[in-house]
Length: 273
Image 1 (cartoon, one colour):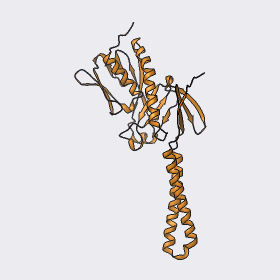
Image 2 (tube, rainbow, N blue to C red):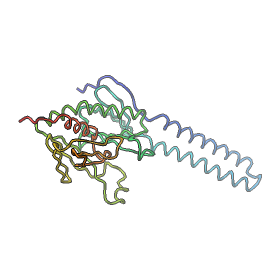
Image 3 (cartoon, rainbow, N blue to C red):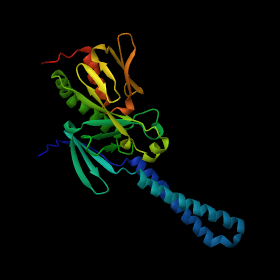
Image 4 (cartoon, one colour):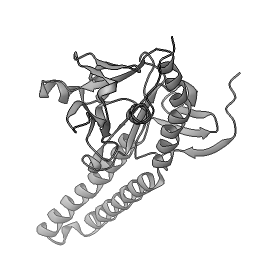
């Protein structure tokens, strides 16, 4: 039986997004109804006034309906409850619940959406494995930033020591990264990073190997630059030359990757056996 631990917080549809759109839609619909009453009551007073009120009525009601539809569109399909030992994912369409322990979260992907396209990493998706579904935490989730930070830190606390032990035993830790489609039309039609191509990185105590054919000796890596505030993660040699680079927003579990590389630079891992 899964021990969820104590409930820490609930993260549903952000109220500011929910109520603002609903209030605006209601006001517009009421305004349209009032104008319709005026039109029916005083419509014969003049053609120009009647024509203007008719257009205003149609516009107000149409915009109100559009906002109601928009509210349903931006409403998240998944909401979350944060527990001491994991996250409960509640799927709104079918109202099904699934508890995801922190220790089973394998991939974390952070990226930008909306007006923060080139600034803040305001969205996270996470999954248990490559054959499991993604769970998306969007800005429309209440206190999404806190939930994202907790999941990221828990992965570092749990998977970090596990990964270091694997490396010390001569094993490798796998990471996935995304490659963008060369076809802009195909990328537009997909419209979702989850449909883009994934490639693999294999990190061991001695080497970093990629599906692109790159083979980097960890002993030559002396510096790492980049992170969530930078677009590119770079591994540099002792002269500051780039040995390897990958976009932060294309690498799954990028913070774990950075933490492991930093540890390996500061404390070279002696491989046992």
